[in-house]
Length: 168
Image (cartoon, rainbow, N blue to C red; front, side):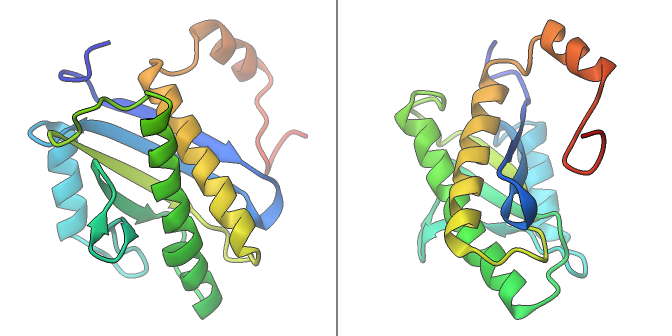
């Protein structure tokens, strides 16, 4: 798979209950369709959903530049702190894992990453939200760079679909 010509899409779900993390990732060139989507999303926030440049700490953006998109409208101070705090830190740590394990290319200056993040409004545990988002982002990026799930695995799962809200 050529990173220079592809849009790499990943999905990760880690944890149980309200502190679980569900993320979607989109990785690609800054000068390609992912870069256009990245800039467009940043420039067009809407009520309750304000994409922002994710940071590892103030004034240190995640590399590659990463756009954090909240999938759940912020409904309380606690939910906001967990989203902008623990979940954002988890995204940074998950990208670091992907660097450390060799998933991401060494030179990331030409690339951007979009991470859509679900933080349940009922979440309460900062450390669990952090850890679940770290692991979900690392898993989603690994999936993206592997080309997604195998067709065989996907077909087996699609015959009897389940998710945390259906089919257990």
